[in-house]
Amino acid sequence: MGKVLVLGAGPAGISAALYARRGGAEVTVLHKGLGTSALSRAEKIENYYGLAEPVTGAELERRGMEGARALSIEFVEDELVELDYRADFKGYKARSAKAEYEADALIIAAGASRKTLSLPGIRELEGHGVSYCATCDAFFYRGKTVAVLGAGGYALHEAEALLPHAAKVYLLANGGKVDREKLPQGLEVRPEKLASLQGAGRVEKAVFEDGSELPLDGLFIALGTAGSTELARKLGVMLEGGNIKVDGQMATNVPGIFAAGDCTGGLLQIAKAVYQGAEAGLAAVKYLRSKK
Image (cartoon, rainbow, N blue to C red; front, side, top):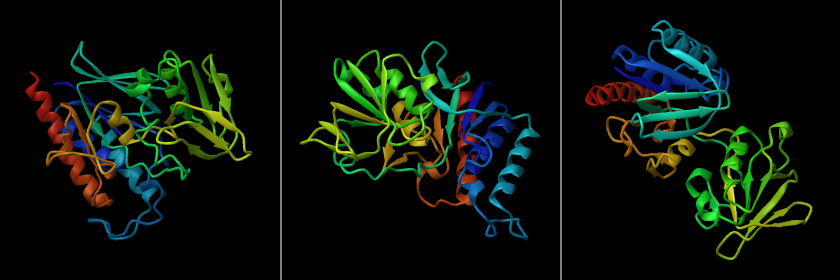
């Protein structure tokens, strides 16, 4: 029938994987590892159907994954850094720190982004030099000076996308730890803590806590790892209020891409995530059948 790639192994991702697999698709679940999801950090789950006694979020997560493995669903623990549409086989390619994965349909269920940076100037300058997608906007910074805010693999990937276009690219680690052995050539690290981002209607400079300044034409945000909305934005998926916009079958505006769970907003509960995952899995199977 075809391949479905599910991003995220929480309730929405597992539910989507189960329904897609039972529908006949080959399913791979790409996730960041046990203990990294919002569910795994929950001390007790006691308002969920079928649980006579409270259970930890970590235990519920483990049970869900075991049930999926029983159906020969493949799990890959890896950090996703890029998603692309491939016209040559009319499907999607995901690239991680370790490998590449291809799929005919994609289900985004990597949760909601809960990590923010309260830095004066960022919100005010969004769309005016502050960007969240190097692949999307690198072209507009040809010959200019830009910076990527972040210190992990996701930030390094965004910097690599900018280096062929910009005259100078900085990595603003903001006190974070950077693996310097993985730094691409030409990327300069500024490890200092940031105080603010400034500009009169457009990004002009980053100001550090020690009072020093760095003139900039643009700033790309790449904190932590790529979440659902960051990944969706790169593929042209529409957002609404910071969430992925879906229809009743969890389909986005991009054919073959579905979303479920916290990343779609609304009630951030397991019951809702499981329902949306089921809808997304079934819709992905229907989409694959329509491609034959």
